[in-house]
Length: 405
Image (cartoon, rainbow, N blue to C red; front, side):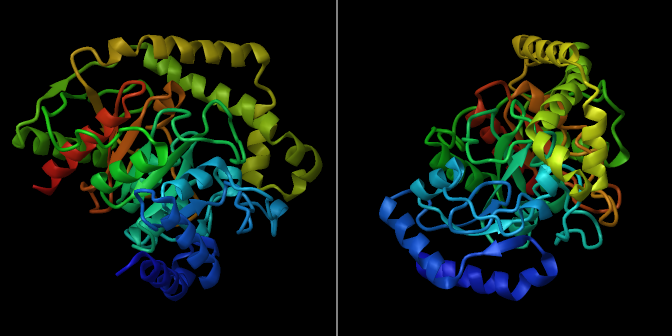
């Protein structure tokens, strides 16, 4: 099937199946998508016309952008976000906008979870994770401010990649917390992720994926923010057993105490910045915000400038101390989420297993292939040092192969 035929098939698949799934909020028409595909192929980029879904938190000139809020219903930006431009230069074809929670916070979307019917797909990148899990697109773009890439990837049983902060461009993204908002990607497998992430970033993240010595994995069984659930422990134990059976080195580690302070600092940084990023919406359209967002912004207005400065200091100190965290290991393994996807659609779940890593700006990869105690998807998260995206992907590939074996 050539790229134009693949785009045509993708649009037909979305039309036939997405009414029930609810992963997309806007889809290109056939003529527009074929023009996009022709431009993508003309770029000579490595993605070669690959269909891509883009989270509706990014501006798109050819498709409406509502940021998951009725305040921006029908909003039509005049230019594309930088990540959309990067996808096009890499040879990708944007076929539609995937659903996001309101301003990428916690108010759930109508999206369903194709791998766990009746359970949340997570958030805020719900549509992107679900679209890849359902096979509607091979690649989708999301964002993570707390855990909005790794958590929905875990719930939907797909690969989620959060590169280091700023590694993929954010201009044209509706901000929630500008020092935390990070662009991420979803695919079905790690090798596809490495290839696509390298093409979009222009960095050699896929080099050495299969060759060389396997990374040394670290695993901790105690964390400073909460105890592991039975499902989290089961997933992590299976990952460790699979890696050891494959010949990889796994070392048990004790996490440094300062990591608890970093976890707490995330709340102050996010809250202080969110009240400013959404100041107009709160001041002039407060009654049209969801109660969960309105109440959060009201509470976050109490975060002082001094508390924000201290939180930024804690984050900077944590980044300076990362050598201690990775002493004797290459990457760290943790659960991707607190538990299996919660039942129902009233909540998108908790980001407690992702916040510290987001604040530290380190690359993270959510790898599927394990389950929780009820047999629902439960991912394992690979955390790598700063600017070590290639190492993160390589470790994820080793873990994926071990789990498959």
